[in-house]
Image (cartoon, rainbow, N blue to C red; front, side, top):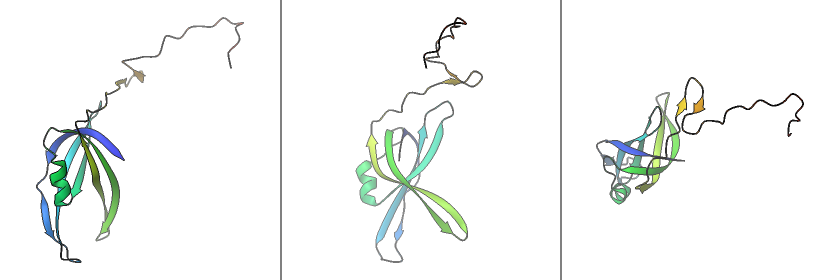
Length: 125
């Protein structure tokens, strides 16, 4: 899956030592704002110091984030993880199609006006 948007928040990096392997780990989380009539937000994470340094994500960057979603259980509750595996910088968010909620019509390129047909005309289907 992928989303394109603007980075609006960067959380403090977390690090530690794996109980299973004893290896060091690092994780950083970011919030991406996806434009639209009602903008959406998605928090995603990068795992591994090498990826964090490689992608070097900064506030205000426009990006396309390629990610996978996985769920995990803890104490009877389930949590989603949005894990990025690739980040493409400089991707501008796609233009927004504005829909008028009253008429449900695209305001930028509305449908052509309805033309009345003659009673004896044959429908082309």
